[in-house]
Length: 88
Image 1 (tube, rainbow, N blue to C red):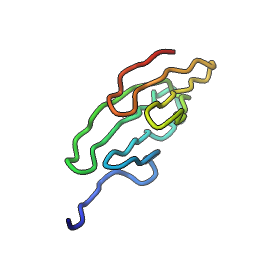
Image 2: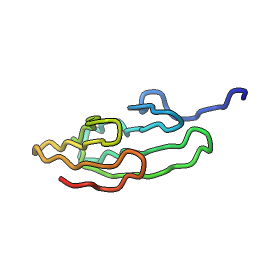
Image 3: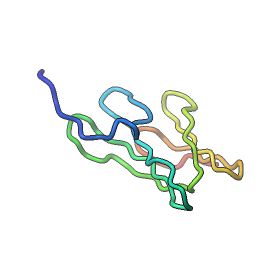
C-alpha cells in the first residue's frame, strides 16, 4: 500500500474517519466565518465545504452526523459523508 503525503495543517484537523478528514479553519480575531471541510485523504479531493459563523463549533452527534453549534445556540445538522444539511 505504501504511504501518502498529507498536506492538511495538523492544527486544523478536527476529526478523522476512515479515508476522510474534517478540518476546521482556526478562530480568527475578528468576525471571519469559520469553514468546516471534508477531505478525501486518498484522492486529496475536497468532498464538501460548509461556511458558518465566526464562533461556530462542530459537535460529532453520531457516526453519520455533525452538528454546527453557533454562538446564539442554534445548531445545524450535516450528513458527515455528503455535507447535506439535515435540519436545524
